[in-house]
Image 1 (cartoon, one colour):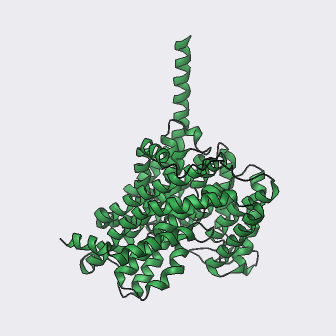
Image 2 (image 1 turned 180 degrees about the vertical axis):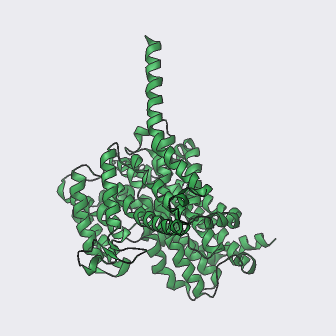
Image 3 (image 1 turned 90 degrees about the horizontal axis):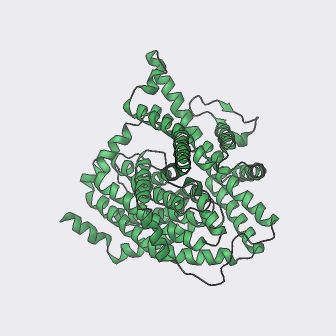
Length: 505
């Protein structure tokens, strides 16, 4: 009976109106390069201070849901991830837009986001306490191996140029070492510059490496960056639904990966999107299509990063440990409201928790009509905008978005420098994705390794601790499988082809 009351509470006119406003505002803010989901919530969170806790939590959840999906617009239409979680969406989204299927790509992204968001909310509803205990079992060693597993994705995102992908990831790892070391506190690669003491912010690096090369190419090339369709084809909803149904297993697998990665504190949607994309490519019978406008690539990325919304709330509400950066902002807002997240929250404040969870389901469902409507107009606007207007607007948004991260002009300078470096590297055949992957995973790998080594050193055998637990061994086995699977699969494919050729003779 209490759950029925919680559902009815989530369906009140006020909560429905705030869900619509939150999803729309989050989608628009998430589409602006640099204004991440974390910033979208942080910008709008002061509005919640005068609300009751249930209403405040519902609004923040709706903003979060919309912002994660909104990052797909810029990823598909400008080859620039609006949020870090949309990195993998650029791989196939922009190629689809270039060949004239940008409207279809946006609709696929919307449907996949809704599906992933519902799976994440279901995980939060049914599996929160036991999964939170699993997240607690992850220590420094497990996070180190998880970061190394993430680096094995380079083979999936390097577009056939594995050596250049490895070099790019190594460059990203070097960039992640700039600044004060996370454990020892000693400055590294700062060249006596106070600007670099804080290191290279991940979002600043992402904006620079993705946005600036796009802007330079837009200015350098006279032709339009996207193909204009003479006749409007609308949402192309039936076609998108058919493609999503045909990739149903991909959607389910990617959503579950996103929910699980979201549960791991600090992992976030960018890692879940990349892992899901890699697994979709690995499981595909036509992996060569990925990176060239394959709809299943968009499905994998968008379903995974939206599933992290519900997954990330598991440790946030059950343990008081934010699963993703936006969850940290939500956690702070709850503390301002006088509510202490933790194991007792599901018993002492159960009505707040379950009303929020059901509100998250409603906000995710509302994302379908809102996302399709905003996506249609976004696609038309981006395609028809003249370059003389589009380039200054995007440039202005990237500068404002970068500055707003830490209110630092130094971040803007770093962003511009990395952007120019990224453009030069792109001309030499290096893609930005491996560099960004190294930049994101570098601190996680370093901190996990150093802490694990120190713990192992206390026992007298620092190496053994990296293979001491079932989780660590399990992730290590996945790493080996990820590294050797392409080689084994390639040999099996060649062997089967040779057998078919022999029989045909």
